[in-house]
Image (cartoon, rainbow, N blue to C red; front, side, top):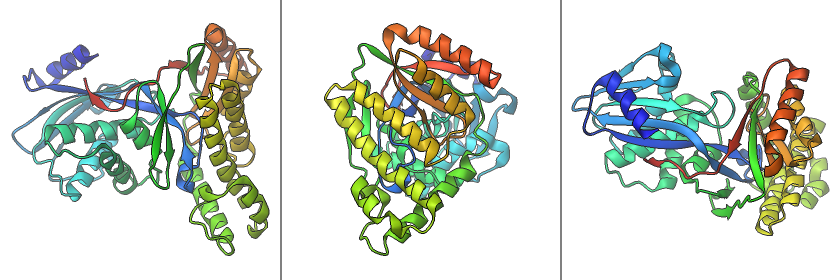
Length: 387
């Protein structure tokens, strides 16, 4: 892939002896959904596919960016000193936002550059192509300009870019998983404190299969903000009696003993998901440490049921993929992953039955939904780096 990126750069901008090539992965969350902004735990991992970037610094203030995924947009050009979120610049607003935030923190990206980008993360699938390109830009800038910034600091800047420059009120999970990823390990991250630990995911007899519904997540952003405010309101109601800062601090028992403080049945359901999902995540990590993959799978299934019934963020396409997965003899566990309303499912499947799983679920999905889902056998890879 490195040779391909160099070739693409040379074709677009001409040869440059100072060219460097970087890679930034996508991510999938194995369990712990919609817990990050509720002060809970998540358990994501970086993937072996992601976003590649080839870059060479210029001796002026001009930035030229080209993506092989958006050929019709051509070369996007702007001045490094004029960083605004411009609708016409589409995908380039993400790296632009990262540069803007780094500068606001005193790290001056002072010269322009030429850059080509290619990503093999399915766009709009919920595997975090936006966070992937944010970390790509942050790590490149950190290396090329010798900022010597700590990786967690870069992760925070990328989240800030998405929140403030792009205007999406996301938690920190995506950026953290991509920036801090480690081969064959998932990350248990407490989103309240940013305490984290790596857990080996040693799948000898099993394989992780991601299925993309191919339904664009049109509802996800508006519903995401709605769920977030429902949880915040539920937290306020619980705080009339309990001394807590987030729903993630509660055990199941504490929630059940105090849920009558929440004055609306919908908000009870939303808060119940946040509390139980957080506890499920901790139990799942413990099961993995004990090499109990069956319990891990069972908790994945329970996670999907909660996201479907209590949090109501699944939809027909995701439910169809998961229910077909549950019926297959090779499935150990399956759930939706990401924001919901489309995007992807993640399943842990017996390796020997992986091909049959893909064929069977694919056929069933097309019969019910009317169009194809895409399937990816996922390997857990390292975080953003130079290649």
